[in-house]
Length: 389
Ligand code: GLY
Image (cartoon, rainbow, N blue to C red; front, top):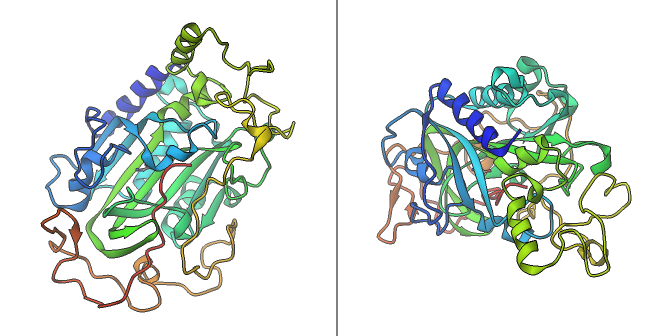
């Protein structure tokens, strides 16, 4: 399926499900907290935060993005680009976790003749926050995904924000299993390189507000008055799978750029100085090689970095990254509300902020009067996810 059709199907599906279709906005972010438009949610931040009344309860778009958060991965993986298009659907106090999961599952697995993408549901794996029992129950009981294909992770590894003050929440990441030629078995929690279990869609369940801070060290300043949904599917990644290409650079909408570069440079794509073959294809993993189309010999010199985010300091009381297949209700301390755990061992639930979210004179998000002040105490938010894998 051509990329243009994947895009059209996305917009048609969400329009048919009551979403307002919005155009892509400028790559220069309309939101003052960030320089570039790093995700489809950027133009909707005021609606998610509740600082502006959304004109519609739900929206969808295909947004052009420059993801500065991922820039260090470009040239080291087969799935990151300096520029990409993010297909998204958004709910502003309308549907939440179950609704977002239902839409994603239906669009991905419905037959092509019914307007879907026709992906094999047996190849889809999910990663969710270990405290998110709503998503766990919905995926395993309502939709019927086998428990082994829903892997639980600590919040630090399965949450998302823009990296700046604003909305934040845990995620349900949807990964497509490309098969044993591309990496070890065991799901995305094991395949940390993300070559085999390719993340294609991230559903963000926004319910918190994060404040100022660098890296993973910042404050949680409250809970959103209304929960929101922000999802992002990599349009080029869907094309990468549906066109059965070895990397995102060879899809129909990107390859012409390479072809033009070949013409201009007189060099052939996929042939390094010592000659070579088409890169990044099947058996790359089995051969123990990790060739990359733009850096054909890089895999011989160094291994690509882990794609997962560094853990927070101080380290939370989790063992190293792992897959937990324990069913809901497993032993261990349970919390009445995720915020209880997020707020740490100190307090109970975070209060909802009501209208208390405000910007100071420099436009930074500040907690409002109804939030408790804890002078000198940092709430170590588990961290922003920093970008799609
Ligand atoms: N805003 C969701 C994502 O970029 O993954």
